Image (cartoon, rainbow, N blue to C red; front, side, top):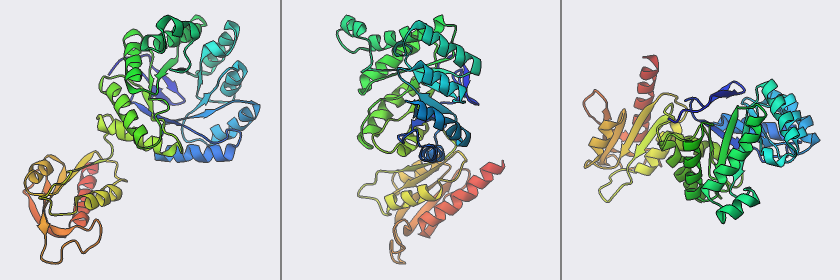
Length: 368
């Protein structure tokens, strides 16, 4: 893991080797405290550690105290052009602000924001997107480049550093994965700022998830990234789950059950997809690191299942009536593999049997 400066967003540590956090952003009218707070709570329930909201006028400032008081997670105020809104948000208790120091006016205005943030121990995120690079940098680079994005971000950061402020987070997002990765890799080499990582404007769920997983995942595997956001068009709620899936895939979150299932082939004798869906759904509340495997046949199944904490290898339909127990019941024959125990032949509702055994194992692990 890349070592960075360390500070807190509210009570949440960021940088310095702290766990990578998950962020999202509300898309409600920030002047509507009730609707915004409801979405913040939904995002927190979905797994967000930090939530950002737009603050664009005085009515947003008026709504902030109620939103902050009711929020279960630290909040970030997203502000452009007006330094007075940044100061107002900080004074009302926001945990972090997102600005571009270069677009909030004079150096004196930057210093006012920096002084206020320092007094209240509020970090500042400098957000540079590929579409917000200064004209002189674009002219020098001949267009948008990773070098240009980093130079733009560092120029903004210098304004804060010159004002004596150092609790800075950088983001350097582009809608293209290669440019995003290149910009963050360059920033990671040249700075020790914590990095907020994401692919901006990734698109709709589906293709947007893939872009985000490739870009964010590639960086996290290099130890780059202190907080992440998956940016998807539409409701922000799915962003949290997508971000958590990325963290789990790269080994940075392991407090949940990891369900492993085979892609199936012509040898498959059980309904792997239905069993896996049911197992995943019914074990999602468990907060114990554990791998559960569902494998469709007796070729690779036993070996793969044996590597999991607990696993099922299908053997075929039973004489009792096949999969008549309904989707996910998997009324068939198979073998249960649990670490440290001999394989056990099972028959009937395979999903139900596996879920029962997995819950018992989770309880045992939790008690150890």
